[in-house]
Structures are given as C-alpha cells and as structure tokens.
Image (tube, rainbow, N blue to C red):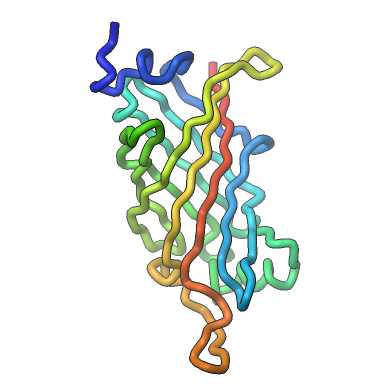
Length: 189
C-alpha cells in the first residue's frame, strides 16, 4: 500500500494511471476575464494544444500548453482585432502564449500548479489553483481526466499595458486578468 504523504497517485487519486494525456480541445476551454469600464469582458482562445505527463508521484508530473494568440475570441470582431494588434498581444510577431509547469503540490483536496507563462517573449512565474474533477472513460474507452484551474495576473508584467485614460484618473481597461481553464485530457496509447 502506498504512503499518501509521498504523493503516490494510486493512493491519492483513484483510477489515475501514469502516462501522457493530450488536451481534448473539443471539451476544454481556455478563458479570461478583464475589467472594461463598469463591466467585465470575457474571452476565450479557440486554438490551443498541450499535454499532461502524469508520473507515479504527483510531484513529478508535468504539463505544457501552447495557445494561439490570434485565436482570441470576445464576441466582438473589432475588439478581437485590437487584441491581436501590437497594442496588446502582437499576434503577428509573437503568435503563441506558452505555459510550462515547474512544480505541482497538493493543497488540501486541491492542487497548486506552478509554472512559467510566456507572452510576447516575456516569461514570468505563475501559480494556478487546480481542482481535480476525476478520472473516467470516454465513449471510445480512453481514460480521461478533468480539472478546473484559475489564476490572476497583472497584464502589465507581460508588457501588455495599452490603456485609455478616462476622466477622474480612471482607466478604460483593468490591469488584473483572471484566467480560467476547464480541461479534459485523454490518455494516449
């Protein structure tokens, strides 16, 4: 029997097996929320890929993700075009945002996933709060895992500092960006 203090998967996450899990983009979402005037704008990235490599010990597991910045979608073509421009993502010159994990650790019933987020050639550490949703089989008999993750970042730290000053010292766009991920991944043969 495994000791749960070592993070061995067989004792901490029933049904989870070691292996490489590919993100299922049809059943996953990479989204964000940012303040705009008196409301929040919600957006997603439509094109992304990645994998989660589950090891026998949760602390040894890794993940890496690539997101196409040009695939940003906020339900406004004009806004999406502006986000792709040099004012924000500069998707023509820096087409991808990447995340590479550096550590994962249990925190109560959930996890903290630390990693390096790169946007526009600027790499900074971030921590994602992760809720593991479980292990199951899909309709094709593949083992699948699901989780939700979230973090908040300052967009200015990645050189995304475009803004419009408003009356009274206010700004049109908030600096804080809330990231939220809903992910399903399938074990590869």
